[in-house]
Length: 264
Image 1: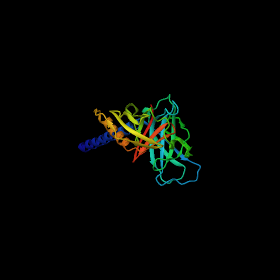
Image 2: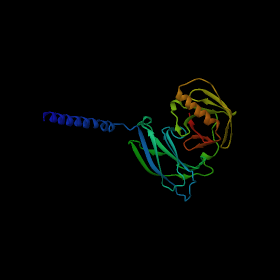
Image 3: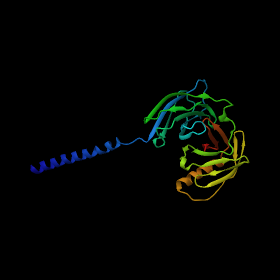
Image 4: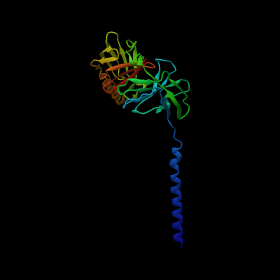
């Protein structure tokens, strides 16, 4: 009888011990720190028109403290939405490591055709109050663009300014290691890949941009920079179009490639 009681007490003690251990993991999870800020909302427009089947929504969040043409992109997202009707929902995540109390932050929205042509856009950045983990900014009205829209025309003042790349494809580039580009008046294109120096030639006719063969130095860098360099040079060699968009963003696109840059 004594042996059975001892076994029973041992079993109860073991069950209590396992139960106590099981409560440790949820307590640790509840203390996790959320390192991204999620911004949600919807886009609407007044015109009664159907979007193309492969229409895209692009959302950009920037530090707009220094004003137009000097905005610093913090996050950018592009999503195919197809022929949906407004209001069109969107969401975008911003790393809290890029946020502080001093700067002004703004959101821009674009609805594009599959080839990148802008159909609708916000006329000015929507000011953001980023104080919570999730921010719902409600409905934003976007306006239809026109043939005279500067985002669809040639590039004024493209030459002899240094442009800093903020996005390669759909990925935002860390600004501490961003590639740069300079277009000269005599048709030369040169800059930094963030690892090596490169040079090429270019010709610009309206919004049509052609880049010649690219030559670059051969210095070795860490693996991440070498991979970024390869993506940048591959994209640059396939560019066919250029546009200057709201906020002073230079967008180079073509053959499924996309580079976004701002003036340094």
